[in-house]
Amino acid sequence: MDMTVRYDMDGQSWHHSFRTSLLSETELEALLADAGFRSFEWFGEKHLWVRAAVGL
Image (cartoon, rainbow, N blue to C red):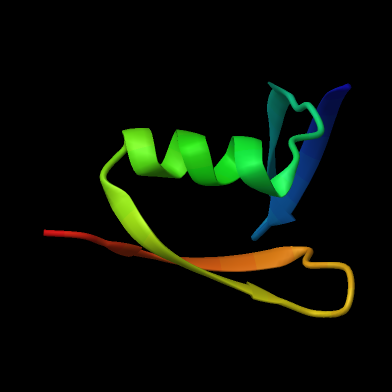
């Protein structure tokens, strides 16, 4: 999915465009692990939020 968000503040505006894709919990944890994160805690009934901690 391609998205653009428009921000307005103090009479100025800017756009931030990005592409997103749906990841499974397993896929997201694997990507986070590749970036050095080791501990994952999911929140909410649908697990829409995750807390990840850097491992040593």
